[in-house]
Image: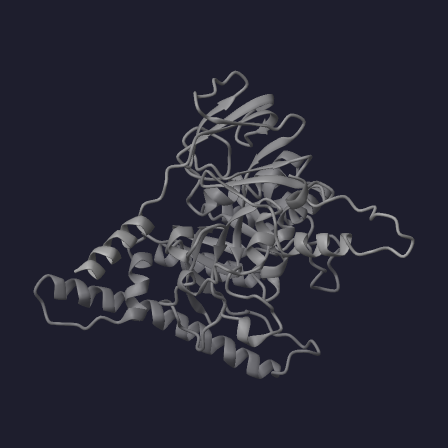
Length: 442
């Protein structure tokens, strides 16, 4: 009996989370992103939410006041496409959990595979990226993604919305003769036709399954549950969007035709050739997640800045877009560079304010969480970071982070290594000229 009582008390203690005290960030420049900035503003956080923001805000009694004079407050950046948490070291197979075998895995859930103790998570958030969308990357139908905060004890605590979307990786519609391609052009064509056939049959089978299950629920003939097709039901019922990974013109065009025919709500991930289909994207109201601005030209006739100008061209054409990076095998370790992809786009025609929105407000809106993330407004989640300058500039340092209203340490493996070698003895006996990291100087 005493054992049962002790276990009950322990479970209760674990389940009860102490309420966070209100916090007021005062004296800094508040960049709301969605509206005006406040040069000497205040942001008040309570119970995980932003409860007040502005120039003349009263600080609640008992709130912790943090003076950030001379610094800047920004909403947490949102990475709309990544494999963060699924891959630790891209070249080590045992740390890669991003893909499943086979082409059809709609029942795969990225969230349950995320390693919440990954060393890459603190490295990423230390640069202001506080929310990520993670998806598996195997096959044609690769499963559902999740939007999650980059802080927490486990994946249940970190998840914001799961499932977020079903991910479809559209087969390449062209052949390649590059030296690294092992299949012949004829084999590539056969592989493409096979995948397109599997894709069509998968959605047809899912629709047939859905009808059969509805009939079973209404008293008709029994039809057993199939976890693969069951995962696709929210897509068929238009409750879950379809995120289509497509870069080439023919891929995007085929995906738009597919969405129009089946009346699906889709988002294009990648979108390298999206500006060439801007009119259709606007007409069908299809957003684009521009994935990886830092790319070389893919065709011999393309200008050197083809990838750098994609965001600017989409903006000029009126296409809803955002910028992300990190969907490739080595993307998890480079997700921390998200702000610099936006900076590159700004250097090649995208207005600076649009570049900042492209990694904060716009991705939040595209993934359906614009009411919670992406800007500093009353009622939104308190995902914020404080810097000593423009977050799109590589010399800027993040000094403070709040995720869901909780102050999070800026320390990471990078800062630990920096401090380790900063303290390395010098031959001349002098102290290191390197300044302390934010984790040590706070």
